[in-house]
Amino acid sequence: MRDELEAIWRAGVAACLPERALARQLPEPPRGRTIVLALGKAAAGMARLVEAEWRGPLTGLAVGRAGDEAGLRRIAFLAGAHPVPDARSVAAAERLLALAAEAGPDDLVLVLLSGGASALACAPGAGITLAQKQALTRALLRSGAPIGEVNVVRRHLSRIKGGRLARAAAPARLVTLAISDVVGDRPEDIGSGPTAPDPTSIADAVAILGRHGIAAPEVGWSESVKAVDGTYRIVAGGRTALEAAAAKARTLGYDPVTLECEGEARDVARDHAARILSAAPGTALISGGELTVTVRGDGTGGPNQEYALAAALALAGRQDICGLAADSDGIDGSGGAAGAFFDAGSAARSPLPGEAALAANDSHGFFAALGDLFIPGPTGTNVNDLRILLRRRG
Image (cartoon, rainbow, N blue to C red):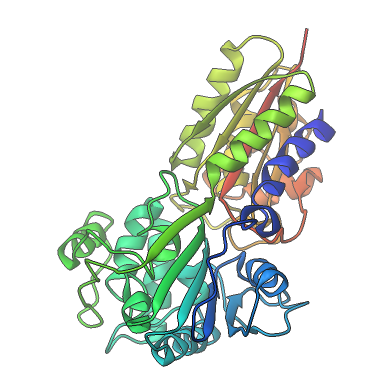
């Protein structure tokens, strides 16, 4: 069943690769220059597709993860850091803003946006230091705050997010093609909305920090952009992956049930375990969306590995069910694994007590000891998590 799990996961990811997602989506060339600004975990792949398909002159910059730049010829590449930005992320954001500002009224600024852009390209607001932004990012990620709340804060402490990249590109024609990694495909949340209008306010951001017990910075705040001129098109997202994964499950003889969800990883895992236990034999429960972890222990892992551990504990003793939880970009949290395989016997086989590992947020250590980590490497896209539970056919 692990081969089936991986085949279903890979089918979902493949449907969201840039070479499939961007096909027939490119705009017409302008009278002037075309400046490509690609940012996110799929930036390099999206830029390569544009290089291969574009008719006419082309320049620009792709900002992604180190090692993604192979094959780019006309579009430059800079690496940033994820999930916490670093000095490279700041340099990349400054270069993106400078290129956008160079565009004139006859030019096209083609923004290729994907998840992960919030950290990979980071321009701290006036007066706030990179170290302060890093500390704030770490606190938010450990707090269990939903990604939508995290991004509200990011948009109001930035010079590139919250529509500011679009503002820098005016008066050029602006077209954004986005691969979405958020439930609901909200443009303001994909990469923290560098080219999208933002309906939230500084007051909203400060309130979010207060709810999670995080001190609000005294500097760096500015109001986001409320209206943006340009075209914004989502070319792939979590629903794309779910539909492709479900189609693959059907070819393998399963009856798929799909859903998108957010929430605390261990709580969602227990709910999904209950769902698959009450489902008919031959059911494939396939879910997308981004889960969170409220970090209380000193272990390592990520939302998918924590989900896998909590689900394994909830399924203990049921030998007809197994699962895979993995991030579509190939990296879960900040470690080297995308996620983990699990089944009803995971807890019994592991040398580490499962409940203790969950309490310590040490899902990575738990699955590493079993040899059950899933490590596909970077995939070249990012539509967030894909979690699959299979109940064996009768």
